[in-house]
Image 1 (cartoon, rainbow, N blue to C red):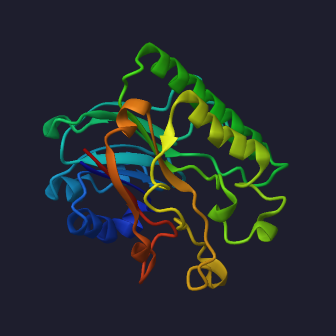
Image 2: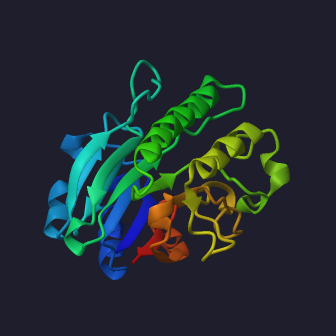
Image 3: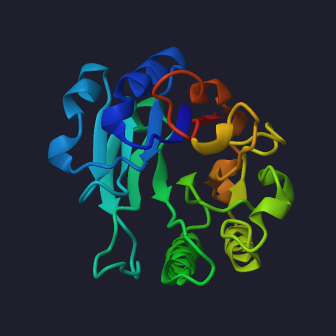
Length: 263
C-alpha cells in the first residue's frame, strides 16, 4: 500500500495537482489537511471519477481534513474524545478511518492538522498543547486495549522536533514549532509506542517552505509533516519519501507530500 499525507492548502485551488499526484505516484491512500472548504464545496465527483472514495470534515474556509482511498474506506470518525474547543467549536482537525481492506492490509488512519500555536504567549499555543494531550490520551487508551492495533498518525504536526528540521534555529528562537513544550509533546507519541518512520529513509529534508521571502528557492524550510505508526504497523513500513518537486511550479501548496510504502 502506498500511503501519503499532504497539507494541500486549499483543495479547490490544488485539485488538479492532487489528482495528478495520485495518478503519477500511484497512491492508494491520501490523507489531506487544510482543505479550506465545507462539504458542499469539496470536489467529491472528481475524486470518485479517479477511483477514490472520500471522507472529509470541514466547517468553513479554515482547517479541514480528508482521507481518500482506492483500497477501501470505512468507519470514519471525526475528532477524538476530549478534543478541546477553539471559539466554542471542535475544529475540523482530526479524521480517522479504516483503510486498505481491499488489499489485505487494513489499518486505522488518522489525518491530523495540529493547531499552529501562533505565538508562545497566544491562547492558541495552550490550545495546541491541550489538543495534543487529549489526542495522546485517546491513543494511549487505544493501544493499551489492543497492543497489536494497526494505526498511522499522519499529517501536518506544526512541530519541528529536531534542530535540523528548521533552516535556522536563530530565526526560530522564541517562536512556536521549536519550543521545548511542543517538542516534548511530539516526543510523547514515542513514549506511547508510536514511531516516526520517514526519517529513517529521508534523514534530512523539509516538507514546508513559506511563500514569502523566496523561502523555497533558498531552501529555507521546515520539516513538520510526519508519519507516525503504532508498533505493529511500524514493522510493515518498507520505504518512505518526501516529494520536494511538488513545491515547484505555479499553484503549488506550501507543503509537499510525504509517502510511505506499507508491506
